[in-house]
Amino acid sequence: MSLSPSISPDARPITDTDTAPGTGTAPALGTAPDAGTGTVTASPATAPGPPPPSAGDTRAPLTPGTLRTLVRDLAERPEEWIHHVRLSTEERWYRRLAADEDHEVWLISWLPGQSTGFHDHGGSRGAFTVALGELEELSLGGPDQGLLIRRVPAGTARAFGPEYVHDVRNTAVGPAVTLHAYSPPLSSMAHYDLRAGGLVRTSEEGPEQW
Image 1 (cartoon, helix red, strand yellow):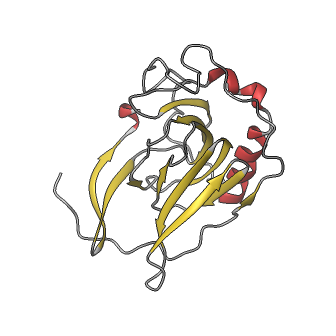
Image 2 (cartoon, one colour):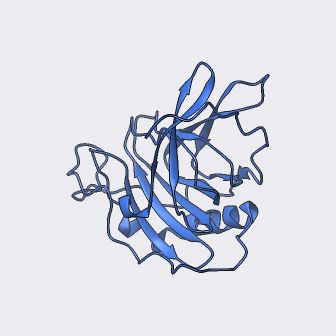
Image 3 (cartoon, rainbow, N blue to C red):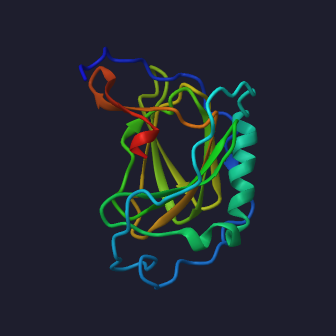
């Protein structure tokens, strides 16, 4: 795919960002195969999950604030998702936990050094919360801000609108687990390189690659 012109950073602030109450409610990852904190057995990058939602939905998308509340509340109920967690040494592991007409929920694990690269969400609104561990988020601010780097510790929820582009990575020494919600469900994701002139779109992927 040929490169598109540089795009300007999303100057709008991320909405509905706060720290969720309770940062230690979820139990630590155990040492069973594929769930240890040291050497782990690589699992497939994509675990099977519920089928994607049907096409033709006309329901209004959920707001970033609603999505933030959804993932924050789910993080406080680890009994509903902790048993699904796997770790992959090859790339981030992920699993779709729920799929509805107007939103979907994903569970993702991150080993140290794993990252997404700069990407958008295909026009979907979204939110994520760190349930275990700690991540780092990179985004572009306004002309006077440049590259923004945010620490995202356990218990923190981030929410964003449909034009948001960011890079999320695990720069810590241990694994991390996150919960993500998107509305409408993801239909595509474009990837970008950060260059001197800004973000340059380099590729795009669809649900068939997840």
